[in-house]
Every structure is written in structure tokens, then in C-alpha cells.
Figure (cartoon, rainbow, N blue to C red):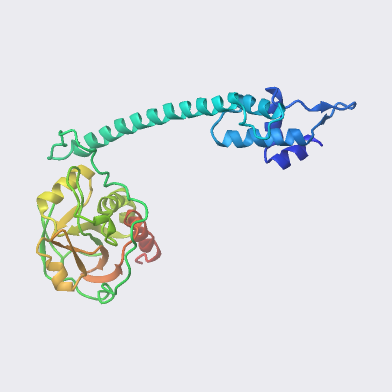
Length: 319
């Protein structure tokens, strides 16, 4: 058979076949016209090389396996030399894993140092487990369902409520100013060295406040360009707690503190309880000239929410 047919049947490229030949792993017969002539044995060898390569064994190291087949064994790993090839590959993989683990430890140390660089809190020095990375989301988080908790909000006027911001200002929610305000409400921002409430990741919509804040930070200028006059984050955490978060995450907008959950009472916002705390469910209000124009609820995934708000602003630009 010709090289193209061999490559097709073995699931490789003709370039790969020529490379195998250059290493002496394949030795096809040459016909009188100079063409290579491959047989079923060559197909078997090529498939074996491909399978071993997928296991991470370099093409150059497949020779003992091919020689085992050449000796008439049914399986390419029926020979001691082939078993030694497995061991060599495992040893090499172990070294790579150890190197990656070491690199991971260094990266975790850099992350912990960077996370506390702008924090008034000191990193833990007890030699315990590395800090939890709150900037990324675990896989398979439960998705919050729409329980109707935000359906009544569009068209509602913002209440006369004064809240402290992380920049020291006092913000009146019924006097946010002209134009659109993006007010994202969230439950609880995690911070390095502090455990989240027990079972936090199993509560639909709870995890993800830090990635959400980082998303609004990274898209802040785009949000303003798309028509948002201002952006605020709001939770029931106190201003001192939020100020540390804002400094550490370099947030370019103010965070509002509502420890008494006055906004929840005034607008009948949805809340939940975790770790003995009553917290806001995650939602975002688009406030225009003192009236709620649009509500995002539920919000998921939180790390992509700023992009969702940006897309809405782009599709609903003010004339």
C-alpha cells in the first residue's frame, strides 16, 4: 500500500510516517519504481507508535515495543525491555509532576503575598494550608433558580437611604445623580486567611463575590463608556471590611455598606442565611434618575456578570 493509505488507516499524517522511517522504526519495501510499499505489519507498528505517543512515551522511545512485536509477541509490551520503557516514562512523568507541584507552591506563595500587599491584614504565618483562592470559581457550583425575588423591582423608586462608602462619603440611594447607576448587590466578600461560612459552595449563588468585583473592576471603563454614570457594589459587610477588600482588589469604584440591610427592607430584596448571618442574594440594579430601570436576578455565573451588564448597556443605549 502507498504512504497515504497507511497514514489514513493508522490515523497519522504522512509527515509522521516519514519521521518514523527516518528513525528506523518503519522499514518499508522499495518497489522497482522507487515507491515505498507498506504492509499490514507497518500499519500495526504505526498504530502502536501513535498509541504509545498518546501515553506520553516519546516516539524515539517506542523502539523496544516495536522490537517486541517483531519478535512475534502478540502484544508490544510482552517483553522486559518494553516494561522498562513504561518505567522510564513513569519516572519522567513523576519528575514533571514534582516540578509542577513545586512551581504551584511558589505561585501560591506569590499569590498570598500579592493578596496581602495592599491589605491591612497580615498573611497567616502558622505554616498551615495555603490560602483559598477567592478570585476563581470552583467547578460545578450550584446554579441559583429564579424565585421571583426581583420581579417586583423594575419601575420602583429608590428609597431615601444613606449608606457609607469605602471612600468615606455618604451616598443617598434616592439621589445617586443623573443617568444610569449600576448597583450590584452581593452577599459576602471572602478575604485571605478568613474561612467562608460552612457549606458556602453548596448554596446556590453564594460563591463568587470576589470574581464578580474583579469583573466590574476590569470592565469599569467599558461600563462608563457604554452609558453607566457610576458603579457601586453593596453588601451588608461593614465599611472597614469593605475598605480592605477595595484596597486589596484595587477597585476603582465605591463599595456601599448596609449592615442593617435597610435596602432589603425598603425594596423587599431577597436574602438568605448562612453561618448565622443574614445576607443579600446576588442581584444587580440598573438605576436611572432614581428609578430602577432593570434588574439582573438571579446572577450567574458571577465572574461573567460584569460582561452581562456591559452587553445590556450596549443594547439599551440612551439617546
